[in-house]
Image (cartoon, rainbow, N blue to C red; front, side, top):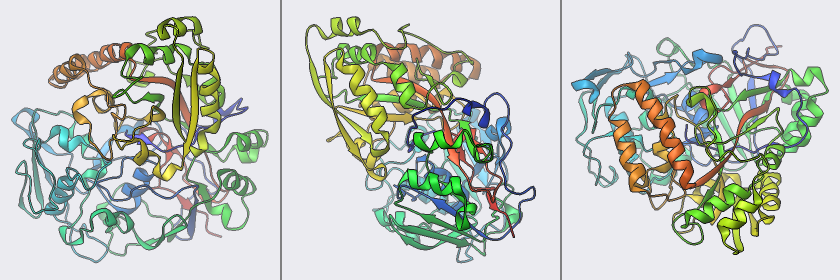
Length: 555
């Protein structure tokens, strides 16, 4: 699923693996047996939202925040832990869509009674308009499935200048019809993304729509002081009879931004006053986890679901030195993934990654193309460098200092000298997504939008998806004709099992070219206050807490 915003943890984490998901469904953690309506849920955050505009929202946890609290999509994932989380149900639509012409045309009908925060009805035209917005170069950074799938969109530049896309038809206010370039059997899953949420054309505000999305969900924005605080209150026109997923337990949701993560963790460990009804927006820090694990009462409030994501070191392949595959492979061979694992939390929280696809997407088995020892092969790296030394920059999120230092130390052994360039998490993806300014190297994570290789490899490695601003997925600007040809061939397959095996084989092919170095598959450690109910990590959404069912104990 899209890229993610998360701070990797480091330190001693023995025993954490038992705290969350895994092979069995994790039980929701609660301070109360029975969720109840009312109260205020506080979210403690170390950052502002990058984008809440549904057209531009493609990172976790802000995507979860947006589509569970502020806007609805045609279909959505169940709000349940474990295997049931990967099941989809109708959301704005009455069903999961009707395919015709062999899956090339999809028709959805909207439910009766779905309304915006001002009481006006959600119309099919509003969904069409938002999907069209995803083509606008003025609104970069969001999911690009519409560009990949919809017919006739190759030269379309969005609706901001009055032009519309003929492959989306709305014969009436309740019906929307999508015509695709090719059959897409899993289009019901595609429309879970915020691209397929409604935005009325009358509310268009360009880039400023980020500041005040118009709500079709259970809450609306009362206050948004960027970087400091957001307050959500109930959308009184949201009808729970039309929504089987969102429970909307709290009366208010207050997001406190700009806090240090260690401060957030300490407040939740103590869980006093209003912090007893609070959760963390981002991952717990290493130092904090060392405090949590020896305390059973606090450890019981640590949610730690497998993320399903792959963390990578990426290269700017459009310029020297990393336009040369040998230089990229040299980094791959030199990297001490065991040191990266320690920086990422140790074996209890991360597993060394040896391929782009996580094991859950490669038949449950790890792929290992290079067969490298965990601490790398420095001599082979030096041979690939051919006696050269490299002096390059590595852009990291400000919370990833330990990770950057581990990479820096391990690559130095082979003569690859890294200068660390920390960037605030709220602007990290905009920084690396500007193709004119993409750094030499950077950290990046990718999570499938739903359980299919089609949501992983094409988004990361198809050179035709690259855009100048807000570039997502293929941030390494990687272009390879053979890879693109194979992507097209796999996407044309109608046998889903054969297609999945083909994605696994393509993973091996791309690994040989090393546009990025996968180094970890990890869990997502999130602390909650003692009075928070219904907390679990949603496995489809990188282990993030599912905001749809969070509540607070009523006293």
